[in-house]
Length: 372
Image 1 (cartoon, rainbow, N blue to C red):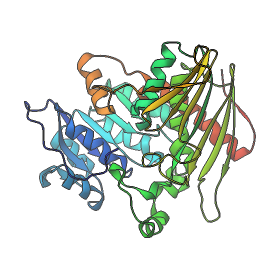
Image 2: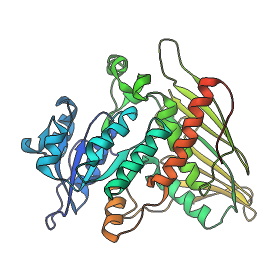
Image 3: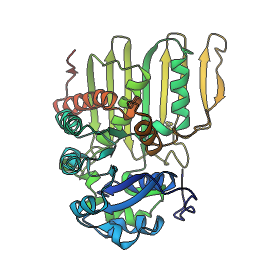
């Protein structure tokens, strides 16, 4: 993972054809997504906008964005820069609102995870973007981790037969412990920022469940080839003084059996630095074997009839356009292809459906049945 703020030299190439704007910097992943656009040889960052000038300072410095491309009014940014694609990173509970604000300008949209705070909001986002005829992509950063893409290739090659179960544990020390590019901050900064962070506000879509369950159930839906569970049971833990959870466990019952999805703010270490215990990532069980795919690791481990003791396989090398969401979305636009996998609204909607059932289950303290 990147750990430097020093920009890479701009690529020597023809003038970029794709005009990119970054709107709303509430989620720290905006800096990561802008870096992907900045490094793409056929993209140009034509504008950024946020009501807080302070939140844009790192991006201005990192990507040498001139003052005339910096706005505190998103409308002025969109009207003056006329982007083709908008990177959007608002608080979870405002995804639908910001989609409506931005979609009227006739742009393609890359929404940072999670999809939405509710299934109704996700459906509203889909309908809004369908009415414009522009592409909507939902970015799940774990979808670009080599181990998980390698696991999906092995699944598609039927290496472990048909997938029966997906087991997921993931999280980090907490959302206030790092900024974009995974730059760590001090404990003093965490304590100062935590009371004001939208991640810890219930009405803004905060909490570890909404932050990380979407990863597990969306990539899990990808692994299990689009299946929808029959029912969902979830429990959460909210420490005293917090209005959101920092730990959740969801059990989803499919026709094939039980899968488990666990989210945690408060892991001993961040998985992109040192894998904590339990390890962050996925274990996938099939009719003819198993795969363990842990975040940011150089290998995946498989068990099959040929190697019941298990063996490690090196992860696939990810090449363009499958290294990040900007590459992939631009490639789909240029080739007129539909989005596939976790970025597609179809797969992300199933993930949202499971997440909504989990929220309801935790609130009502009972199992929730999903519609067929």
